[in-house]
Length: 132
Image 1 (tube, rainbow, N blue to C red):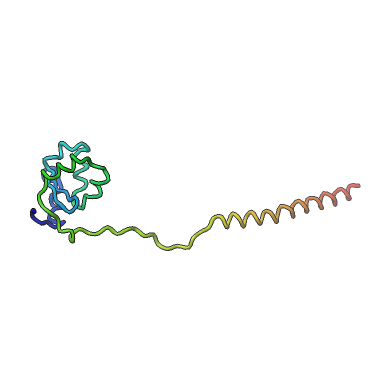
Image 2: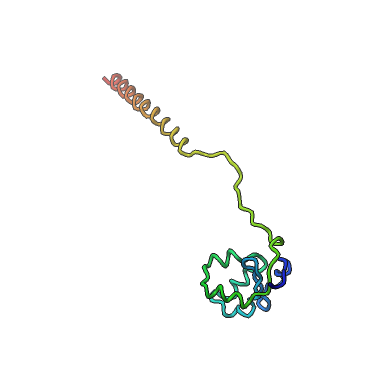
């Protein structure tokens, strides 16, 4: 077992000349691997200063890539120094049911349309009586 580092200590190693990552509670010095990384050094440099486990897992690294980690292992991280991710919960808001609004408009038009037709018919009949 290697030395135990806290997040602040690991975060200091965040450039191309000194790059450390935290993956699954372990600390890796990947500085020598930056030029050989298939995704480029920017990918590795962008994951410094935090727990890189999800970034590492999301890519779906091969078993040979995982075994390469042993070569870069420098110690463990004190997980209590890594902030836990808080799941975003949207604020509670009243639900707007657009279907009800459309339903009300349709009912209003179903009532109004026959009244308009009736009014036109009455006017037309009244106009025809006046003309005769």
